[in-house]
Image 1 (cartoon, helix red, strand yellow):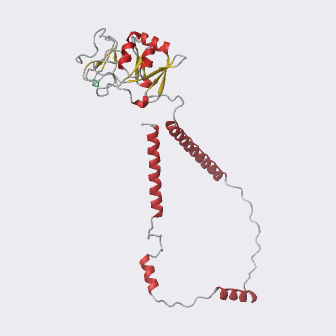
Image 2 (cartoon, protein in one colour; image 1 turned 90 degrees about the vertical axis):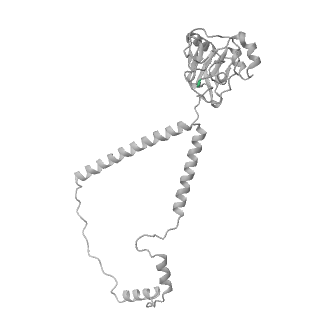
Length: 288
Ligand code: FES
């Protein structure tokens, strides 16, 4: 799931939560705690004519208090109190408080640590990585010379896991033919001597492994076969292997653009720009 989708889900969840809290707080209720009168009782009280004795006013109360003061009965002198003697605190009580303090400090620090770790992980998950790499973006594959060397050392195939891509060599003498067939977006990579093939089989999506004996790619699910540059040779696949863009900088750094995971469709059935036939036994039989 992309970072944008995750942010969208989080924002939607927060909005729904806020709406629930707001509606709950705003909801009127008749329950007001013990001793509260219901609406019906209050309406009945208003309707009943009850005659109560007239209550004294504030001025009456003030006048009564003043009269009482002037009669000399309002103020009573308090008894003289000697200061309470100092008693040393109980060391056990102090020890208990200290233990409580450390327990609480320990729990608080642990909570803070776990909360901080969770927050940092969440932010790191949403934050785009500085390299801009990873499947879906542009993935640095290293120097061109190193990649060609790795292809030779790995018997014809180089796998780049970050891009979920096989990188193989494209023969220079096949480039003129490729120019008549392939998209201009793919040609710069082929002219540099590389193709980047999406590992996912265009038939039903299994991961297609290399077959070092035949020097083809051979899908274990239903037996589709592709030559070393991903052109279909056999099996039920509807086309050759899908591919990503390869670019080589002036300093020889190779970048694979994985196009948000939407690889360019592989070449049509029958495309065979390299003329490469199987160079040994097949790893999967029955595809052709
Ligand atoms: S998924 Fe590869 S041949 Fe079917």
